[in-house]
Amino acid sequence: MAKELFIDLNRCQGHARCWALAPETFGIDDEGYAYVLPGREESYDEENVRKAIKNCPERSILIRDV
Ligand code: F3S
Image 1: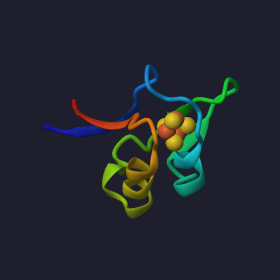
Image 2: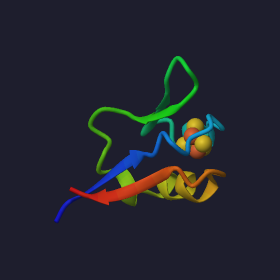
Image 3: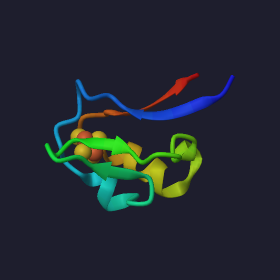
């Protein structure tokens, strides 16, 4: 089963640490919430992304089976 990185927008509060730590994977939308950049859904195993997951205060960066 494949895995995919995603942002739980019910939890994201716009701290932007994800974007600061892994700008190649995360963007911030016009309202200040995070999103996974197109084509980067499978980057969950990369070092910067792991740091972002650990550093999100709301624990809103998640990995799901797809
Ligand atoms: Fe949201 Fe966490 Fe990033 S709160 S903006 S996913 S650091």
